[in-house]
Amino acid sequence: MPKTKTYEEINQKLRQGKAVVLTAEEVTQMAQHASPAEIVEKVDVVTTATFGAMCSSGAIINFGHTNPPIRMEKIRLNGVPCYEGLAAVDSYIGATACDPENPSYGGAHVIQDLLEGKDVLLEAWGKGTDCYPRKYIRTKINIKTINEFTLFNPRNAYQNYNVAVNTTKKMIHTYMGTLLPNMRNATYSTSGELSPLLNDPDLRTIGIGTRIFLGGAQGFVIWNGTQFHTTKPKNEYGVPVTNAATIAVIGNLKEMSPEYLQGVYYDKYGVSMFIGIGIPVPILDEDMARRVSIANSQIETSVLDYGTVGQPKLGQVTYEQLQSGSIKVKGKKIRTAPVSSLAKARKIADELKAWLQNGKFEITQPVQMFPKNTSLNSLKETEADND
Image 1 (tube, rainbow, N blue to C red):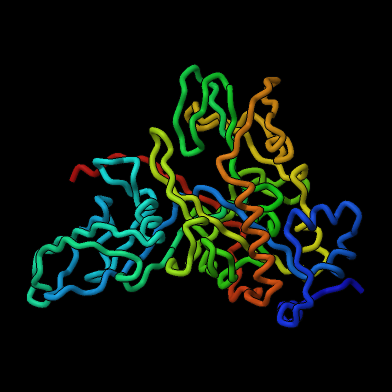
Image 2: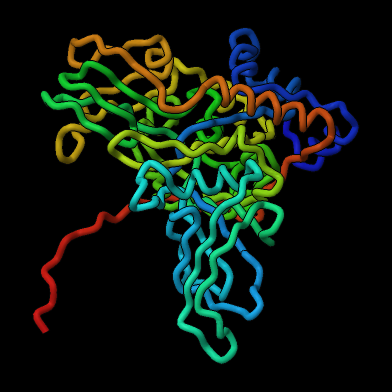
């Protein structure tokens, strides 16, 4: 009878220091000479990781009440606008928000500055009410003076992502970096065989409540991410060949490290934030053992023309080809460059592995699984009402 394990059995082994934990790259190497049945016998948890730009990110901040109190209706942190439509002194600062007078500095940099212990200038305005009479405050805040500082990211860790090229004669600037004309370069994201959602493509072990490595601390998956799309085309290994599933995550920024949360500015595009995420995948059975053994040569993604409206697909390549430094598209050899850090992803996978082995971290069975067969609507332009 095929070997199976439960979450509690694996956690018991972790508590006893007897669990075998490998990174996704290590188990892929193991799979060259071991069958899925042998892997499920020998391995208990596999760590996955990614470190790349994740624009749909931000932080919830509670500033604390002033004396006399103010109902903040316009908020700026180092000149960057924050969302003010919460309670009196609660705010959400998005990673891609920017200072209009300094567009290369944005919400991601404010979050990083606070995380590094720096002082940040807070300005807030209110209309003044009987219970919140104050109309303006200008002061300095830092990570010690604010109350809650919570990373809350609506869409992170894409299951796969496209390769970007530019077929036009003009250089273009995108969230995938600068794309040279006439397909003189190609950029890609995702850490290939280390990438979290590629090691569990059917999301059997990743769902609401999954405990993860987030920004150097413990975090949680709290929902499927926005633009969650599970009906994308898959290759023969069951892996989506373009961007598909995503996760929404949350964690305590006061416990995180600026090593794994970094603001970035893309020239002539805007601000984003590099986020470090690691997810432990329990090896429950042979199917999971087979899934985590996926190799870069078996993971394919689509090459899209970012220079043309509609971004037409030009071809399909593997991560083995991408990481080799060049790909061939329509007979042309093109240099490749990542817009995420494989070295940092490896460091995260190793750190999460150490947490598991040292009893600092346990796996969590999701309290609810993600929806199946989801698709996306596009925004259609309609004529405005004449009323």
